Length: 172
Image 1 (cartoon, rainbow, N blue to C red):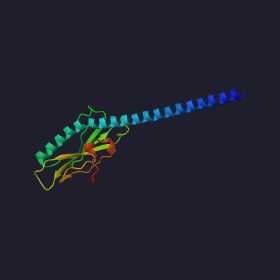
Image 2: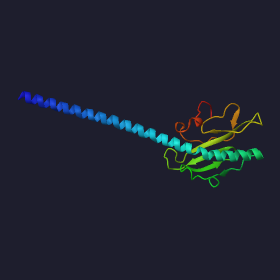
Image 3: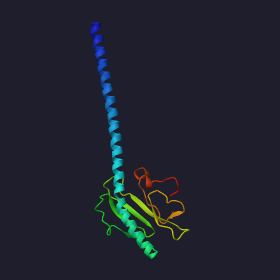
Image 4: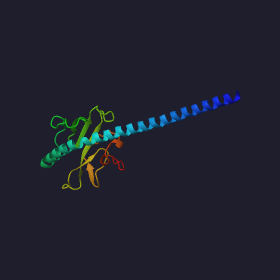
């Protein structure tokens, strides 16, 4: 009788051990899947941000051309009517602030970008009137003697921005 009980006890112990191992494996798999999904969402957000860059390139060229021809910035204006946002479903609108800043506002399609803004700010070397006009993006700072001409309104997490837009080494 005693040998039968010890056999049942070892079988029960074996089943409990197997059950715990299965729970542990399931937990590791769940954590792995969660981390992969989170990384995938971040990659999608970054690619959607990059989609907006060609649109901004056209806007920057048009604004810089007007500035170079007249010496003055165009008036502050919403740019949504002049530029097609059909190519990207993530950009809701663009605003030029009249001081050298282009600010993109994003749609609610991506929760990490919903209602957020990414700024592209013109910069010049104020000590050299013949200096070229350059643009900085997001939290990045213009190089050397160049100074931003408008306020940065970027409110997107730096980890979501391309490297060229997230230079946090200097004061913004």
